[in-house]
Image (cartoon, rainbow, N blue to C red; front, side, top):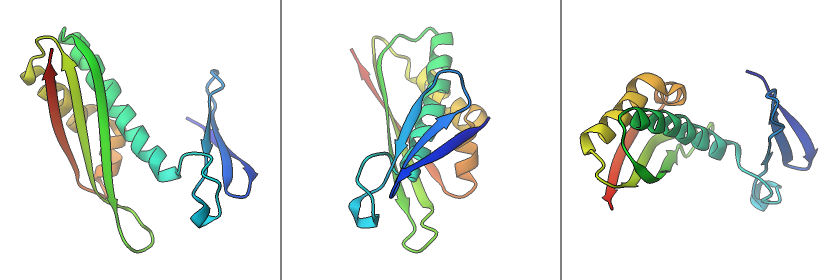
Length: 140
């Protein structure tokens, strides 16, 4: 896996991957740090990557379990250290599902498998910070 980051100007950058799809992602920061609020902050992207990693696992597992999910969202909250490097000190992932006749046991197991076996981002981040999960199921 290879990615690159191109500097645009000031504190504005453009990230891309070696994949063939041509996706780009803007990176920036707030005016407080010399930026123009014109892109994601790098640590936001880490949390989005974490959510994306586990979400893909969970959706795949639930499809195999024949669970019909009509909507799915993950909210991530992370606390950071006060001093540099301002690493994550605590991360909470809230999995929010809606669907018809969702089996809570199947949902819990899908999240557990992602958490303990499949999600590489979770495994990497957990080495430095505790990660907690919360599951909400809205039956339709």
